[in-house]
Amino acid sequence: MSTWLQALHINGGVLVAFAVFFIIVEIIKGIGTLWGFIAPRFLGIKTTIYNKKEIEKLTVENNKMIREYMESQDKINESVNNRLDNIENMFTKLSNNVISVKLDQSKEIVTDFASGVASGRNYTKEQYVNVMNVYHEYIKYRNDLIDSGQINNEVETDNDIIEISYRIIKTNFEKNLMSSGFIGHEFENKA
Image (tube, rainbow, N blue to C red; front, side, top):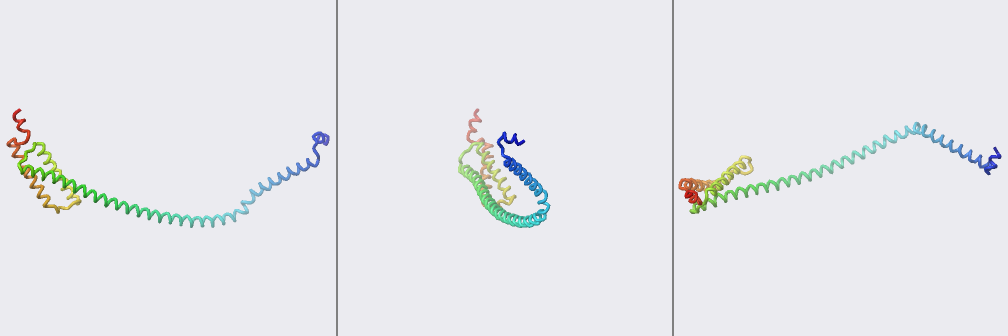
């Protein structure tokens, strides 16, 4: 064997050094494997106690964070609820304004038409029918609002004015029906 080593020009000391190196590596691997098996058994007690304390500490911290989060959510919810209440109040005011405008417009259409009729102005049958429909919608809408409690029945004078206006319109409409006194009727009768 020494001739073979001599042919490769390897010194015996180098060969022994390599052998010792590989033996040491194998011993270290064995110790590592043994340590991996034994260490958890001996250190397991210590780590379990440490883990319980760490878990308790984390639980306390988590509970604190959850409490803080819940408090912040309560503040946010309160703020959102306040904003929703403000929006609801604004919507109610806007709705009441729309109701008021719609009722006022309907009342104005009926009273203006009645004023024209009372002053002798002539209208078509369709104009009479349209204004009477506006009156009926006004009454229905107003009664629905009174029944639902959105408005109260305090505006009796307004109601009296629109009732008087409607009677003027209805009376004149019936009179024109009997005498064919509507604008445009003279052409229908001749044809």
